Image 1 (cartoon, rainbow over the protein chains, first blue to last red):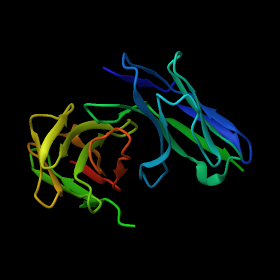
Image 2: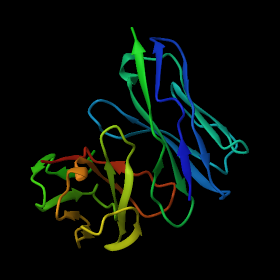
Image 3: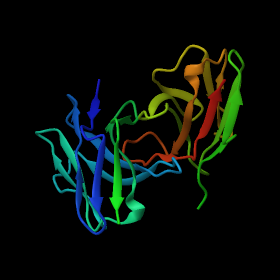
Length: 115
Length: 114
């Protein structure tokens, strides 16, 4: 079974600074998908960024980028120019390439933005 | 753009009662997933449906059942409710089962069992 681990329960960053959230996972599969979801106080789950394991290039979405290290099974999220609206719980998630399509989530990291 | 609709948004029940949660996927989405998020927890997968057939099953209690109807909406039926069932229940939908298809989440139903 696949597992996802987020070792940072809480992180804080000054507004306009850069912060990196860590995520590691365990799988025996070679192809899969990794995601970062944001859950603001409204509790809505919002997809931030997605990475296909077969792509070596790290995904980027505006101020959000990932550092995907397949051999190390590491998938960190970097938020540049942090904004107050970035404050939320961030969940790292794994999804198989084929077969069961459920998302397996990590424990989450609560990000606080200090003005 | 249309989003996933869940009803009710809030539900309060007594122990041993029954609850029914409804999910209306994004139009033309044929796949529905149910997740349970306990207080301070990450979402846990319960069950999924593709084209009205169960496609995957997670740690869903035997007291829970679910189905997907011909119009693709889904219902999660929960019986003999326990205090531990208090959680936020998310429904997500996607177009097909392929892994690259994004799962769009609804706003969730907050269930409180007293």
